[in-house]
Length: 129
Image (cartoon, rainbow, N blue to C red; front, side, top):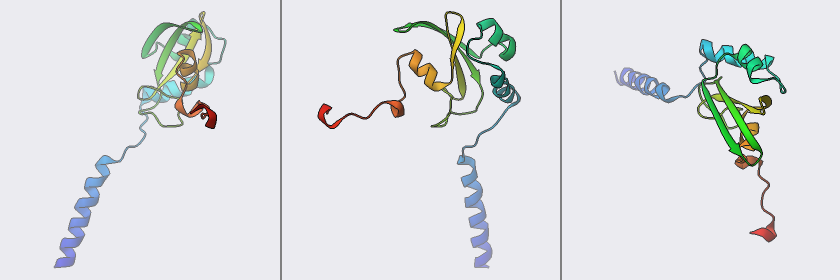
């Protein structure tokens, strides 16, 4: 009888653990945005990009040291991963300057807003500490 209790207990414990596992989910809109990104390339205008991708989920404009930028954010993933191209919970940024697409993804976005990714910064030399 104790084996039966042990098996039931292990079954209940393992079932409870599966609720906390994070996994990538693709919804129809995410998948569509993800696939359409393959048709977008640097040099396109905002109108051309919107014709392929549709209206962005989030739109931003800002003035930075490099000039005036516009950002279109499209939901392509359900979450960010360390080496992914997404920001803000699964959005892939498209970076525009002077109405032309100049970059796609997290690194281009961070360069435009003058916030380099921590991993891309050079490590300090021993004499500069």
